[in-house]
Amino acid sequence: MNTYEGMFLIDNDVVRSGWDRAKASVVGLIEKHGGSLVTARRWDERRLAYTIKKKNRATYLLSFFKLPHDAHAALNRDLEIQEFCLRHLILRHEGEVPEVELKASEIENEGTFEVPEPPDDAYDEADEPRESSDDDDDGSDDFGDDEPRNDGFKSGRPLPGAVRKPAEPKQPTETATTTEA
Amino acid sequence: MAFERKKPVLEIRKDIEIDYKDLELLEKCISPQGEMLSRRRTGLNAQGQRDLKRAIKRARHLGLLPFVV
Image 1 (cartoon, chains in turn cyan, orange):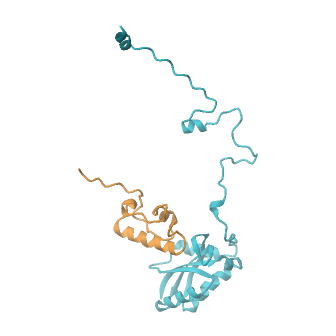
Image 2 (cartoon, each protein chain N blue to C red):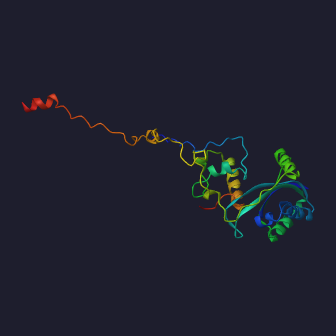
Image 3 (tube, each protein chain N blue to C red):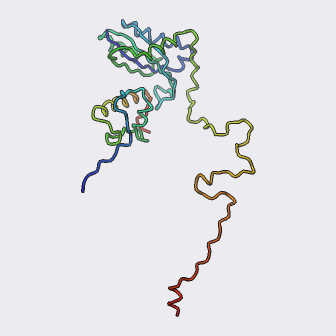
């Protein structure tokens, strides 16, 4: 038996019907091939860098499991056939399973943990408007009308309304006067 | 004229293990077009650069990083 680390991209439509059900379908496949699960947790829900199987978003399931060494290929083949798993990556893990993963998996298995519903497939975090520095809800900006903004000061430009002094006319130099004489 | 080696742009700590899940690090090691940066830019040794290559390719496979932007 070897220890493996597996990352599975789960279709968000399956996640919407229930996270436990989605997780059980992955665990079921591992156990079908003679493996045993050590940890499994929701790693993230994010927008994909490129479209995979016509999906733009997916939920990532990170798991550590033990599997007989000859079952790896069969599990890979089974995962490729399944439709709930958009893509997967299974790597041999040397050493003990990290403590962080054991704790995170424990927290998720507690009854209080709730998996947020994944957003729509077209949703993009980058389209969200950025938070401004105006943190109160009074509808106006944080600058008073009588006090000047210091934007110009920061950028090195003169403040609006600032009047530049006209350049003083140059005094004729001594050398110029000597040449005239 | 003496050849002066350019300083690496990134300073990646030598003691950390490069992992495909460490997106904060991997995103620094790719160009705006999604290409991997060279050893001269990352400042890694040969083994570190190979680990980085493997991590970026794994992250690309899982849709965490783009192949091309």
